[in-house]
Structures are given as structure tokens and as C-alpha cells.
Amino acid sequence: NQNQNQNQNQSKKMAARLSHDSHRPLPLLLPLLLLFSSRVILAQKDEDPTTKTMEDFSGYPIHEPHFSNSLSSLSVDTKSLQKQIDELSTFSDTPAPSVTRILYSEKDVLARRYVKNLMGLSGLSVREDAVGNIFGRWDGYEPELAAVSTGSHIDAIPYSGKYDGVVGVLGAIEAINVLKRSGFKPKRSLEVIMFTSEEPTRFGISCLGSRLLAGSEALEKALKKTVDNQNISFLDAARSAGYTKDQEDLSSVFLKKGSYSAFVELHIEQGPILEEEGISIGVVTAIAAPASIKVDFEGNGGHAGAVLMPNRNDAGLAAAELALAVEKHVLESGSIDTVGTVGILELHPGAINSIPSKSHLEIDTRDIDENRRNIVIEKIHQSALTIAKNRGVKLSGFNIVNQDPPALSEESIIKAMETASQELNLTHKLMISRAYHDSLFMARISPMGMIFIPCYKGYSHKPEEFASIKDIANGVKVLALTLAKLSLH
Image (cartoon, rainbow, N blue to C red; front, top):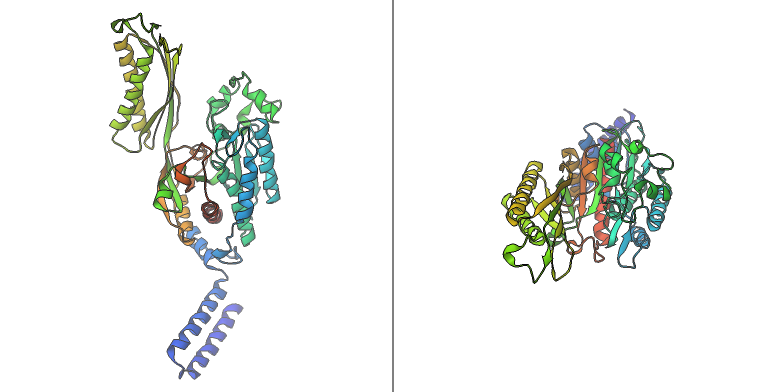
């Protein structure tokens, strides 16, 4: 009330002054009036435009200023962030510019230590679970509320690049730093997660850490018997890196649904669309549903010269025919969002003068529509049966390794990401993620969203993978502002 009385008195004095100075030209008075009016409004609200945006988003007034300055205060330390990306890339089992960082390897352990150190330097409280998911938390002023989380992974397949996943971990830590430098105080706590083994390189299981967080009992049981290609068990590998310790019950990793109020992942696009269209930010609306299939055919084999064509039962040609059938069934779906890939095709005995007696295929098919994807899988199965019958070979295996549902981004998080992009004057577009990420499984715990940034020619999983520090900084700003909005919601 005292502030309002003071503002009213100031308004009266200004009105009298304006009346006295009415002989001045109007164009000279308008800027003065507008400036004063804006100051009175800001004094009454005791906030800046960012706080106003947050009030509009959250639906209730914020009674204390959360940013000391305007959006211009959201400054990314690009020099430091690029240095961290470069330093993390040195923890690799292959020479630069490639990066190879396999789960629980010596380089992986060193990289984890590096990330935990950065979290500590940013003032986050750090903890780890039984499989090495790493959490860094900034407590909010209402810490009893479910936190807002963000993060990604840092493991890297052989001879890949230094940005996949890393941008979402180091960028998330920098987003926290951005908010702290701006004077922001979170209501809900903010938590950065570094997920264990998003890549399937060592044990053949993608998104291992986030699957466990989402409560996969089947995975928890399977990991007790899982070994790598060196016959080292998962549990032994984890213990060598300082995890699992004496416990074999990995259910301690499980998180209850609602443990977080939201999860947002920053990631390079891994495709060319944003770069080609000159757009700064991709707002992900859905993540395609992946499925993996392993298929085996067995034939008679024989000498490549001695066995005549009518007498052959060629397992290799059965595999080739099925590979073409995969393409056919995917295209028949009628949707551009349906994709299928035969990424592995192996022949036995693998000699130029020997008819293949065995063949093995591994098929990846994805769609944002789970039912449509499942129809494709069934068609592939029927084709495999028909091909085996027609070619006189045995379909010795048709195993669906995983058949995950798609994940839709939460509307409120999409809105927060779009609004953040607009307020930062960054162009954006709504997109579908056809690669899958830890967000796919975090969606089983909390509402989810993803932010994409451009990458050079869409390259990923290769040494040429690259994202400019400008694009990374844009992504970090959008992430920071989105986290701020969601924290106050």
C-alpha cells in the first residue's frame, strides 16, 4: 500500500508537470510519459518481463523476483562449455576425432568422474545408483515437490563423435549455471541426470539406465545372466567400475511414476532437417516406437559349382528376399513415419565358393504409431514363413528382441519449449524424433519433452558429427528457460 501511495503521488506530480509543460511539442512528451509509465508498472509489479512470462505460464502470481535482469541475463559461457566438450572427448579408446567410450570401461569411468566433478563445481548435490546413473540436484525453495529433470548420456559407440548425448549432459549442467548466474531461484528442484549406457554397444541393450529407472523388471532379471562378447557378466563389469557392489538386486534403481514432474532432454537432431531449413530449435512432439527382430534361416549348403540351381536350399537368398520384403512392407504402410532397416546380415560359412547353409538378419523397424509398426512386424513374420517354405529352408528363429511403445511429449512441456524459443527470438519447428533416446523411457516416469539443435549435415555416430557452439548455446538457453518455467509451474 505504501508503494502504491508513493506511485500515486508520483503520478500526480508528473501529471501536474505535464500540464505545466503542455506547450512542449507532443513528440517530445510521449517518450518521457512512456518511460515513466513503464517504470511505475515495473515498480508496482516488482518484476521483469521474464517473471511476467512465468506468471502467465504458471497461472498464479510470483511474489518475489526470480530473475535479477531480463532475458538478456541468460548468458551461456560458450568458451567453457566448448572446452568441456573437447576435454570429455579425450576419454576415448580410439584416437581423435573419433570417440569410443564403452560402458564401464576405464575411459567410461574417467569420463563419469569428470561429469561428477562438473556437477560439484556447479553446486549440485551428486549421487549415483547401483548401475551408475548419476544425478546432480539443485534444491528448490519447495524441495518437497517433485523435481524437474533433464539430462542425457555420455557413452559412445566405436568411432563415433563427441556431441551425441554429451550436449544434453554438459549442456544441462551449463543450463543450471545460466539460471544461477541470472539470479533465478527454482521452486521445484532441478536435477541433471547422466544415464548409464544409452548405446547398446557392450551388452546389446539400449537405454539400459533409463529402462531400469522406468522399472523394467524383465531387464532387471535379464541383467543377472547377461554377458558381453568377452564373456564378462554385466554384474562383474559393473562391480569393476565401482557399482552394484555386493548387491545383485537392481530393483533399487527403479523410480516410482511421478518421481519427477517433468523431464526435458537436449540433443543434437542426428538428422539434416534443422540445418537444411535454417531453423535454430526443434521442439519434439513424439519419439518413434522402436522394435528389433532377429531372424535365422537354415538350408543345406553345398559346393557353389557342384550343386545345380534347381537343387539348392539357399539360406543366403532367403535372407536377401526377406530384406527386400522388409522394405516392401514398410513402404506399404503409407506413412513416411514408418521405417525399417536390415542392419545386420550374416552368412555361414561365408566362403565365396560355398552355398550359405545359415543366415542371420537383425531388423530394426520404427513408427510413431505403435499399431502400424506392429502390423509391419507381423507382415515381416508372414513373409519369413512364406520364403522359408518356397525355398525349402528352415525358419529356425524369429525373435522380437524389443517392441517398445512410442512416447508423446507432454503438451504443457511443448508449450514451455515453444514459448522459450519465441521469447529468445529463436526460430523453431515441431518435429518427430525417429531416433530413440532415454526420453522414451523417462516418459514412463514423468511427462517428457525434447529439444533438438542442428548438427552438420545430420551426421551422427561418426567422427564427422558436429554442432556449432552457437547452436549449442541456443539449445542451452531454451533448456534453461524451459526448466525455469517448469520449476515454477
